[in-house]
Length: 310
Ligand code: ATP
Image (cartoon, rainbow, N blue to C red; front, side, top):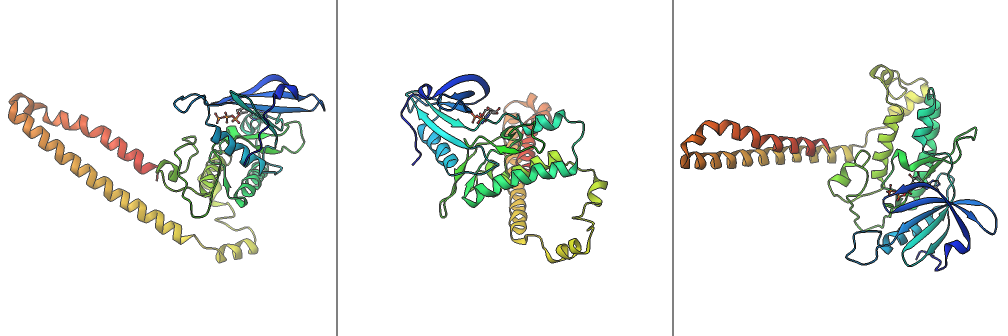
């Protein structure tokens, strides 16, 4: 059970400027009165009643707090304290002053492979730690990857926003449709049971944005062209995960057949509709082909969107 203090946050912290905002509240700089140390306060509005659509349910806030309380890692935003009033919960967390990783990169003239790998390593260390605790973040995206302090000679990654994170339990299925479209895994879109692997999809997208190689660069990458004997030996020993590949391929085929049957049924129904309408009104016979065109276009679009998500 998450530990939340039923005290006034302002008795302990002086509230300062707004640092950022999200769907359910603001993040502000706060100053601890006793020590003079600066922290950040995440102010989350609570839902007033079960029927209200504004604010967060208390149990979602409790889940975020419980998860943050169990995650102490150099690459994960640390939680210090939690206060609750009638209308909101305030999470006192470490102040992360370096801004978003991608903004930092965008300000640079260039980004070397080595630097990109170093960032990715730190992201993987933070995410790997969560996964050893059976916690999945489920909202990994550039906005949630920040830098502790951009003035540091070696930038230090901090993963933030555990609002969608979930502790996965053995034998319990967890499904969710939440997340950010550009970064969510296909199993989220398909509303299938989720695992930590969904985070790896998001990391893949982030990596792709950081290291988007050209085809020629790919051809000389050590994965394709080993540089040393050791790399070559490692490569010949490792193999593709055929179990998940076969599962993926079977699902893809099934979806194609389903879409085909669905499209045939729809065309058949349209034809029947057109026939019966043209029998009622002979003038309609002329626009039969137009009718079919406009009716089938959205269907093919939907199909494309469905299949592109797998
Ligand atoms: P979302 O709507 O994306 O779920 P949220 O309400 O959960 O967001 P966060 O993403 O945690 O809120 O924070 C919102 C913004 O506040 C962040 O994008 C970031 O700019 C800033 N922020 C969050 N945590 C910190 C921190 N510890 N230190 C400094 N700024 C922060």
